[in-house]
Length: 416
View 1 (cartoon, helix red, strand yellow):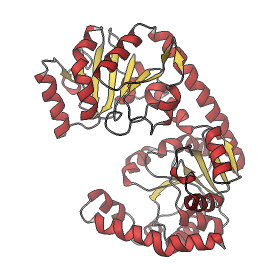
View 2 (cartoon, helix red, strand yellow):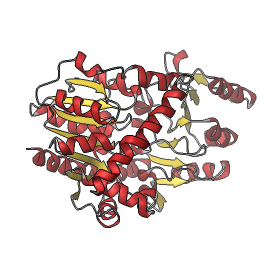
View 3 (cartoon, one colour):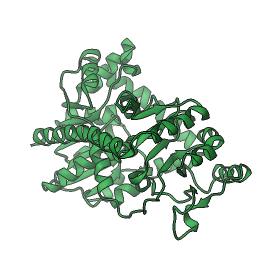
View 4 (cartoon, one colour):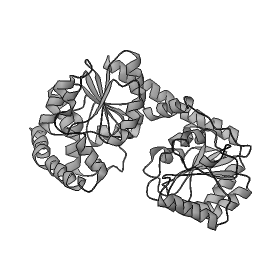
């Protein structure tokens, strides 16, 4: 009875209100307009569904968590179908040869989901990380399609568990899943004790497997400079306000500095170039030289090479951490680099975890609050062994990857 009450409130009040709000807003927002344009009518009926596929659903960036599972499913001969929320992920989906068909998820209306599930006829549904939709899960529940959530997290500060009403709602929502595969024991404990969802196990974070896979399968390499070098990755103007005042001092410590703005060829990007000139810092644009890491300061003005730079860097600063929320620190960590972040990093689980893991009295992830602390952090890391630190970090990462690989096998065994 409780299930019916909650799904009816969602079906006839909450989701229609959200749908109407987004539809009105979409007329002045190109990305939202794209969201609606790819979902006109029963768009899925224009395609031939793969025979009895395994269905994976992700929002956008959550595809990185799904890729290791996709590869394993395909290697054993399963058909793989992927649905997604944001059109921004279409480029990555198109490049993946292990996906038989990908389409946007239908609107989360009962009639749409019923028809979609009947058309797809999946063996099971796997939702990556967080992007659970009530009607999607409920209709799978009614159609007896097993549904799973993997690489799931539920931290102590999650609002879902601190309010009686939201606890009841999410208890019901997650009860429509057949099993939840959690990243660690804290997540499992919160699902079990706070949301009272019994079907939970700890299988690790599949993104470690994906980051290692990407690192080991990079399509190109960049020759490592003779000097140790720091990558300032995915920076925003607020990050650069902290970096630029001490950039000359960092150069004096013997480092080469690679600046990788989060956005290129924008007003903010050209502001960065102007600020470098005003500070009388000689720099090279990455795209303008046959030897791309030739000078002591390089500004990367192309996209898609950050992972290649992280592979050989001696130290990384991850941007967004002075802006509001840090970008992922996992890529430089997987490459074996210590990481510096600003104060706004509590959105990132790996940053919080590796702040408490030390090598030679230095944390693997170090928090700084201003230019002075940034310079001191660079100096401290420079006084320790980069090679032994790199080996230590990779060993720590491998522990997570081994756990995720074991957990992935548990997921596949349950699918059997």
